[in-house]
Image (cartoon, rainbow, N blue to C red; front, top):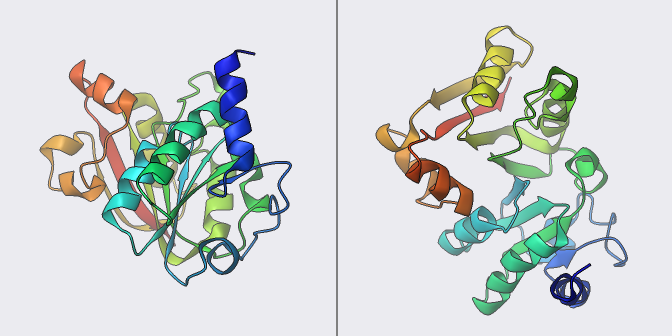
Length: 220
């Protein structure tokens, strides 16, 4: 392991805005993120596979009266978002280092107001379908954790994963309502729904000519 990563892991272990294994609150904030971590009653928004946390901190900057938690397993990446949040006084931003598969071990039923799934690995091989973050088994967890009428928002450059998710909805495998979607976000009426926040890879994909796909819905 590189010295740089070791230093970042040490920083994460000492930071309040990073919740991870080895800390006393890890796995003990279920249903209590507002009360015990953020110390307020504001809405809770969770970004899955947050990477460097561009969305988590970007949205956090624009909505200071909302709590944001970025979830990722890569501690070195989380360090980037954590550092930005600290440097800019974003006390409404936190990061949880864990696997997405363990999401319900860290959030309580109907605790989350909004979930963002941003540019996940498309996992195109049939054998990896269950690992796709929009696969039914993951959606069942999101349904459980979201408040009634909470929103799930999904953004990707990958046509395969986007169409796969739409197919699940159209075939009735995902029961949703108030669905909106576009295969070309930046040339659609929904352009402002992402508040102008872009990840590093989103910028790269867009500059290469990839259309950015977007959908949002509530579970029925």
